[in-house]
Image (cartoon, rainbow over all chains, first blue to last red; front, side, top):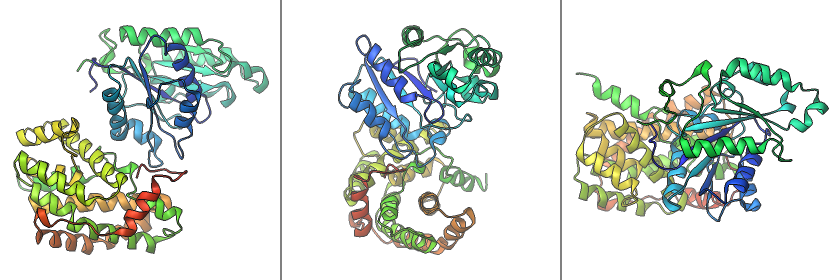
Length: 226
Length: 225
């Protein structure tokens, strides 16, 4: 199990194209001045996401590591997290002391979730263009992530997505765990997302998604203090 | 407990045992890119080539590491790394090896030498090659040297075949037929390794080395190596 010491390891998961890399880049831009950051990306086929972060220059040189996952992005964050741990530990060693390490999964389906041996908490990113029924479909990304972000809210009228339906369905499945609506590209809703991440880094506490709450979150201590 | 070593060998050589091996193709992806991995026959040929190289390097190191003291483990570990000519093959062996050691220690196996090797590998004081990790872990797990070599060879072959299966792609039946057919080659590799000392280790598979080097600059890649 992960220890409480060291930087917060924050998973960022979600389907292909929902805005995971854009979110990580935006969070780096907004938090880079106050926190020591690094990121690991799990591209499916190329180093596109890692290169995007490098080109965007949101992190200092060397702080983005790419991990190829043998065509199994879910395995790499859930079942056998070995190569991600190698990358995370190398960043933590080379750039100590860090405050926050993002672990961005490859774009996957709704069945993906992060191993508690890899990250302390995770954000799951979906977007309105994937259909307003996605929260209702559940799956561990929606039900077990500490923060659910519904991205691209600006597109909702264009794709016929009803945000109130998404909000209602997410609430029903996630209990008290937060769901935030945002348009990462335009900055809408980002203050709340940044606020959540900042609090997670500072206090190591978050509300568990109650429908499938992890056992180690029951006693009020948000961290995995094993 | 009779049969316990078999159970231990099955567990640590299982693809579900966390080592990250599923992220590595050991150069196969570059053979695929070059059009030299197009079907079951190619995969069978390349797997045999890989195994013949392991017979005179990894398997020899594993036997030398079996029940060795820490100083000898470091020596064997360094010698084995020296047989691996390419950056990706060296990194694949040491990154999966470090994770193999961490996963064995996480089982709760208590062995002073094993713990010391695990810590040294993690701290970067020794490469922590997978074969050396197997050799160091085997006595603590109750496995004999021969069993450990076969378990290691099997795990290597299974992960290679799985990578080839996804790259080509092949069906599960075809992939398992290849693995089944490799049994004799695995036994032969194990036997051959018993005749060499750590100082005699070598690996000779230049085609694999060249492909492994080209893989570093491959644009589209599913695998780390």
